[in-house]
Length: 258
Length: 210
Image (tube, rainbow over all chains, first blue to last red; front, side, top):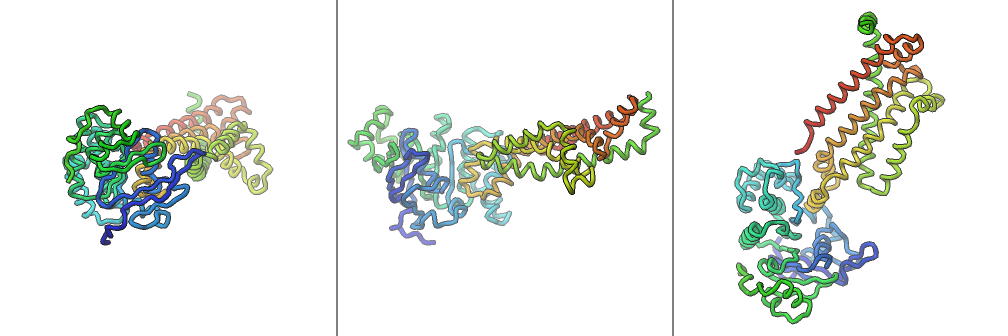
């Protein structure tokens, strides 16, 4: 299907989300462009994860509408909607009783791909996520944290979704591994050009990966700016966030963007 | 050994009663599994129902077995054949460990694994068959194992309502004040319990996820 560039890949219109009497998202509006990495930045409880889960309908909005490529998510078959999106979470959630190959090949398999194509796809994904081919036969508990999250990314990419939803995917990794995975993820994204919504509380990560950064606070989108504008912003909430990360953030952090 | 001699002399009857015993335990465990596993799955997915269901199964468990067999005696269709009573009573007793372990096993699946599965677009059925049951299987089987061991013991009471099984020897021995006869029922029953425990244990280990 040819993509109409005027239609946003994902769009939130006046979305609110309440649970047990608390408003988690309040009159939320957002447009995600096709092929960008939109980072949702914010402290714990600001509503970032909720926003992400509203996209693949792990949660449903209380009011307002969410569209994916112009189509209301509430009108689309739930299972079909989710299979068009890769979902990567911090806890990874690999299936412990499946080896790496079965973990990665699960969605293609239930989508009914022929076995040969699944096998080829697994090999391809191991290669692009920087995993040696013999990892395929390993079980999750035999892998390091970094390897596990590579498998998590490979699994999310398996059925070639147009959209990737990533919830602090590198948050639990040690700094070196995180740095490595961020770098490789940027390189991968240059080739694949997925539409990515990336949740993090880490300003460095946001600066490094984001084509635009949306700062969230108390269920609202405070600003939506590109990384350079973000650093220079006079908005008190933005500068407070930037200050909290100290003076180590500068323009050199935003590498690797085209 | 007097007991051994008694068993050898009456080997036809020992085999017959052991077979009856196995029939009672086997059929009731099968029914309890067919009802208990779906119920356990159901309450694991609908937390509002877990308390009443588990409480119900618990209450059944507190009814003394002899009383249970007695209660069921006047029930129309059931009362006609004493095996029916025995099988229903044993099924009811076996429910609790099976329901509870199924519930525990499924609730024990890592929430992150479930969230990832749901986010990937697995249907509820696919999640159940490919993720929840395989990961819970060893806990569920250990519930079945407990149920079988309890049933082998309880089934000896079934003889009190004339349902047969190794309890026949035990009751007869008690009436005759003859330890040989009591043991001719008790020892095979104990062996059956051990054997079942061991057998399901093997299965449990084979099916254990990594």
